[in-house]
Image (cartoon, rainbow, N blue to C red):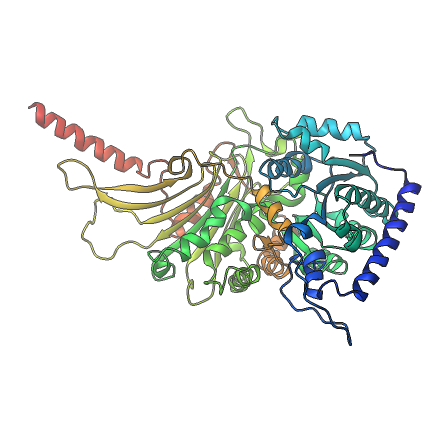
Length: 584
């Protein structure tokens, strides 16, 4: 990749390219070289899929012959530039660039794709390449990937700096497309993906500058936008308004990386491709649903950022609520992005705002040689920001009326775990009364070690007639041995954005519905300065959280083989008794 040109030379190059593109567009309109539909397939619709199936309005009085253009020729005229805004930040270093490398290794980036890192730090190209070398894993494709990447510095909210960025993109795009008669006739189709690896307060200014100066004029432009999306309904609506003034909804891909995780993508398949589950998926058979997020570490020196948002805003309002929507929604009409997201929004709109009596918040304290939250020097003195939260939500529709959906999340807990537990109602009748029968439970473990298992009851082995809990286990690593290479969530989501598939991204009205649910309780927690319950580092959380689970009817199951300690002791006693009888 050639070095980035000076600003004056880039501006001259831009003017020349724009004049050439205008001349080519005029020639296209005069000549009968193809229909408008072929032109749409060639250059994209500027927002959604590059292969638009919608008929385009024809120019009045004009007629076009249908000339089929080979797909391999059309693809050779398309350049792709991925612009990573905030290229010097932690998110870009740890997630965005590694995901792009993985896509490149898998052959999923087009051969003409280039990557431009953009940031406010005045790095040289050597500085940027050194950062990539340090943060990307060693592999055979690493050197080739780094050659795709260049760096440009500038302010995010400066139209002038963004214009320079556009010049850089145009220069790169012109160099990556091979010269040919078709190229001279049709020009370069430049598609651009802008990845906002930025703090949210920079979004409005960056969006305005990009919209004014850096958008592609010959292809699509798409924005991948990271959370958090505001702090409450009011701040979200303000942010949404500032973005929607610059971009259409179809151009914005709001990322919640939990939607890119393998098990999250499997929820719909489990529900709608298996007849055994869907008839039971309602208030007549489900006792409760518990969605859990646990971290076994504290803030680890990053308390300054976390303290601004807290556990509810950082995890519950987005990651866990998105999983809830997939579990609770009705069957979509199709697998199209809008049909899926329509059903999710319908479910969210049926949830009343959370009440204070349905919430417990906590904050971890020092224990087991680990410091407490307030011991973190990056946390403000006397902070009451929750590091743990549990809430019960109720969906007021015919399917779920009265069923508690329990969301719990916390830091510095006893394990690292994200799972969804659909707990069914107890069996009716007293056939096995007093024998330790526990409810059936479908568990979808998001991380670590992706798994799906169904907990059910069976007769305990041996000569006794006792019952025991067992698990029908689909642990991915065991079942898909030799073929399991699960992509990172960011790989999946970036690929979907490049392909124009927004199924796993969050729509504007989804976020509005989510903030409607959480804003009242967040406002109360902040205004009343509610003190969080203390819990020890490495524990299961506050005591009141456990009491809340019991009150909601959730049956706690020991993780692992699915057998409670009581059941284990009873089985051991039975086996010892049988062994003694044999020896006698």
